[in-house]
Image: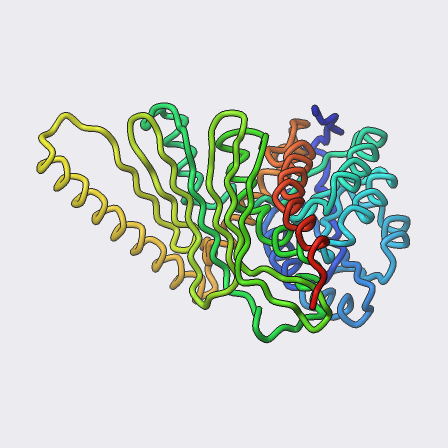
Amino acid sequence: MKERMTPTNGTRKRLTVAIVGAGGVAETHAAVLKSMPQVRLTAICDSAPGKAEAFQQKFGLIGSYASLRTMLADLKPDVVHIATPPFAHAANAVECLGAGVNIFVEKPFALSSAEADQVARAAARSRGAVGVNHNATFNPALLRMFDAIREERLGGIEHAMVCFNMPLPVTTGPYTHWLFRGTENLIFELAPHPISVILRLFGRVLSSHTLVTGEKILPSGVRFYPTWQVSLECERGTSQLYISGAGDFEDLWVRIEAEDGAAQADLRRNTFRIVEKSHLMRPNDDLRDCLSGAAGLVRDGLHNYRNYVLSALGKPAPYPMQYAGMSNSIRAYYAALLTGTTPPAGLAQGIAVTHACEAVVAPVLESALATPVG
């Protein structure tokens, strides 16, 4: 699906920007936006007025609102960042697009194909620019992997393995949080990160097979699975995805296998390692590879620690890596908006990731419905 854009001349004025949703992720959006000279963050909207007012004061904004409709009418911003809980993303996106406002939506873009279609229709009517915060695809280590692929250092890529081990309060709750309100919510919360990477590598997901383990019946009666293992067939290759919130150890990485080598990007530690074919004898090649890999890890580690120190001293540095990825993602959206081009992570990507998440959860939901709780 091709998006129609509203060209914006960045030389005439700064873009006025507002955020709806005053939670923790909105603070990262605000920090990035405040560092960008081509935009002006003006207002925050949240249904809890106290949260909106505190956010306004923290970031020095001119307005805070409890109603999105009122904010849109009063300010007529160029862009609204949608950072509300996931169940409100689609409705807020449709409202902003209906008011003629461009949008940048936190993941998950939508919670169903029906919601995604509603946003697509609203975007087609308004010609608004839709961006989606698939910030994992902008992680610095992954950008290095994409560069290696573009430079054809590995030959054709064939398969990817993605680990997304993210500790979650599975045993303690709070079980009233959106994450625990549905069997499928863990996937819509975490899977857009790795699935957006897989789509970038191999195109749309054509089929999937899902295995879940660690079943837990929550106090609300929801059947919850903290660990998901997924096999995906895509347009240009295959992949395996491991998602878990059950442990206490964070481990996030992407490994690709290709015709002439392999590469691994560690999203947690911001390291990148590539293994390529060589003409050396095997013992010599193994030694070369080990020395090269060790030197690269040390170099990456020192670079990351330097950024940590600079960040702790209040100086601009991309640390932690989630901030770096989100900063790259937000800046890429505005670069497209200011030049009238299609955002690199836009409407088509948001829809494709939504469809993939649905495919992953569909057999699990069918099985859960067929097996009554208790």
